[in-house]
Image 1 (cartoon, rainbow, N blue to C red):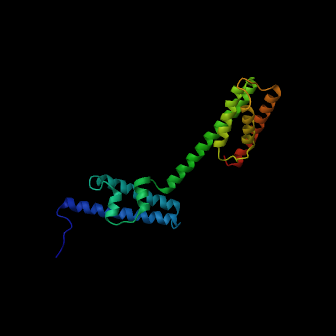
Image 2: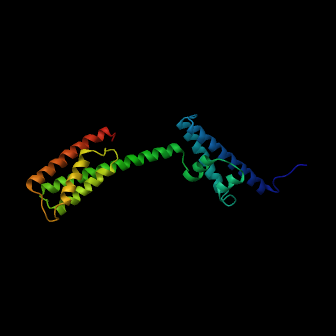
Image 3: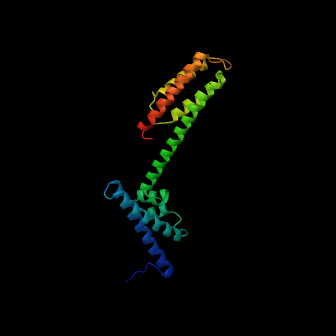
Length: 209
């Protein structure tokens, strides 16, 4: 005796869509594993993965009232496809696109941190030239410079600028807010700033920036 899975065209369409959704999830899982194992090239992976994501979005939109949760759909049909669920539902873009975006964000963050360091170096040196030598004027500038240098991960912990700014901040913290640097101290601080700035600029090409 033939068993009918549907009673009308609407039910038939629903089951056909379920079948297609099942196939997309399975195929995505296979593509993800093939990419991780270097069985396919990144360009092949990205092309196939993008196709599957596009098909999934179209189908998910059609089934949104019937299948509100893809995770529940996968559980119902005992699909062990965590990579596919992550790619289709959570990420929504191929892993190669995610990696490019992360790299671009890292470069942008480094560029912003470099610009901040340069600005703080110049501000500190210009302030000394303008004879702003009181502790409560100098300390905030060196503190900002030290913080910006520490944010830049491409610089080693023992970078000249970091150690010299730390020494100066320690020295200034033992003085009163209204105390002023002597002419000799001011000249030495300016020299240390200039030397550190030159070392900083020289370090950038070596760090690949």
